[in-house]
Amino acid sequence: MAASDPILPVRRTFFEGDVAYRRAVSEGLLRKFAESSNYIVDKLYLQEKFAINGFFNANSFDNGVGGSIYIENDSDIEQYYLSIANTGSSGTSSFNCRVYDATGVYVSDLFTSSTLTISGDNGTTVIVGKKDLTTTPTTFDNGRAGGHTISNGTLNITTLLAGYTVEPFIETNGVAAFNLMFNMKLQEQ
Image: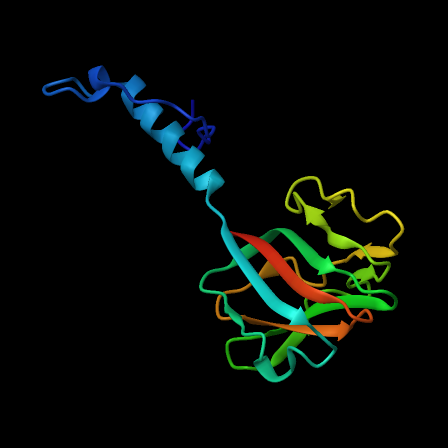
């Protein structure tokens, strides 16, 4: 094995016999520690979300009202989804984020013209999004999207650089739609 060969992440249990007083430090013990450490790093994600409770409209998040996320380290977007507790009686709710660099200059919208959208059709707790973006992208919904016109969105930016700021905005809203939440899972590089 070469020094540069990766050690696969494996969830390993340590036992008293592994770490007992005066126990020899063996290659097996170091491998177990390395596998466990890589497993933890592999599972470590940042979960960021924007939520608005109650009725919302296209101006609900304007001018930073929805808050913002500061990206501390370069991070890959691994998963995102949009959830609406009540989709409304008609119309379409669509969501996007503006991305700014460390100096405050606009970089791009997070999604292309294909934003996250859910049409109003008196649906309750409808969730749409994409997961496993860094491996095999898969669209998903929670099974309640039937009867709705949905778009799982297409990302403009898949890696958010250190210093970037992400600000949400609602493009359109369904009539009487309420309780919106956007969730994004990031993995630092």
